[in-house]
Length: 172
Image 1 (spheres, rainbow, N blue to C red):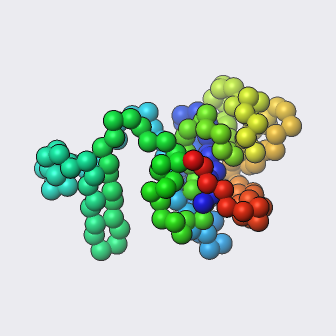
Image 2 (image 1 turned 180 degrees about the horizontal axis):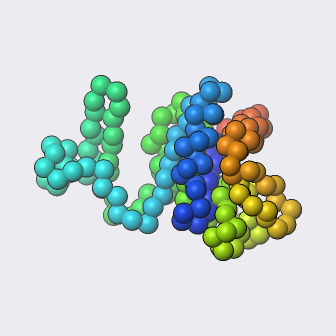
């Protein structure tokens, strides 16, 4: 499975971009996973529900299944690494789009809005392939128009095709 990071500061539009790009990549027949990292504690369940009660009673892993989808939650004393999370994905997945984890050594696209006044991450990270921005960016890094998700999807598709031709990559 190939992983591509989508990185940037909070509020830059990473999730919005992914939501626009995902259906365009699906149209190309890609099987996709979205992996999102947050610094906040996450809660997928609701107090009083059976799955919540099972976890509270001591189950370290709870799998909730229904007719159209299923969810699995694991209690962990430390945050899982990306390699562990990728191993948990469906092996038929072609590309994992990883939001967050700025420091991971994987190929990335930076989402940047100059109006927010934040510095670019790209100059300090050679693994940033391109910067999706709604304004000009300094330097020689490839710029993608943040407001043109079709061009971002095409960039990802061409990059993915080259990576796939070089053999599958797995972040561990």
